[in-house]
Image 1 (tube, rainbow, N blue to C red):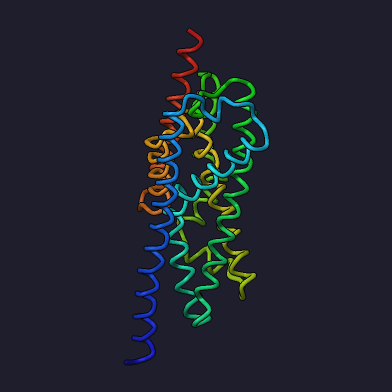
Image 2 (cartoon, one colour; image 1 turned 135 degrees about the vertical axis):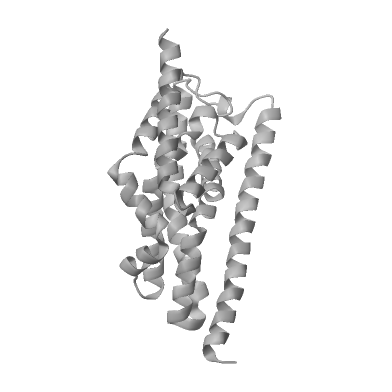
Length: 256
């Protein structure tokens, strides 16, 4: 067997293993969220009804971190697979370590986002603006979040971040850095790009509920379509228009 055929075989095996690993992590994250939603729904007193403190913040931070992994890993898989393929060709047997560091850098960005989301949840909880399941009790808050996220879908910053997410090869060729530190930095930079695409959309979890699995699935699907579908960018702007219309309707109904 030629060296090129061997490399192709190895890449195909690696691709199956990576897809399986990402799928497993995603399923575990969704299973955790489903279990937490069930426990909160059946509990007499939800943690969100308790006094907000360090322990409650850490619980919310952990919940957001798992939720972000479950929602964002599927849309990051094309970039991870592309990175691993390039790394395998350039570094031979060290590609596994490099890919792990790339994913770690990516995940670190969303862990940071989760800390901010947990702090925001605490502030909204203190202001009595959330239900026990993490949904907005105020049409002004929900409408404002929807309009803000909808408008962001049409901004140049959103387009610039989306370009990097939709073009894995172009992003990696422009950002390539050698070594393990380089792999981590590239993953982190992709995470920044990804957060730049999706931060406002993830904040919409507060509209229908942080523990609303159907809403979580809808936003996950939207992120995935935006990044991998041929007309994903246009679909994202259409969704933005829908968010704006929904937000205006909520505000209008509250003012009448």
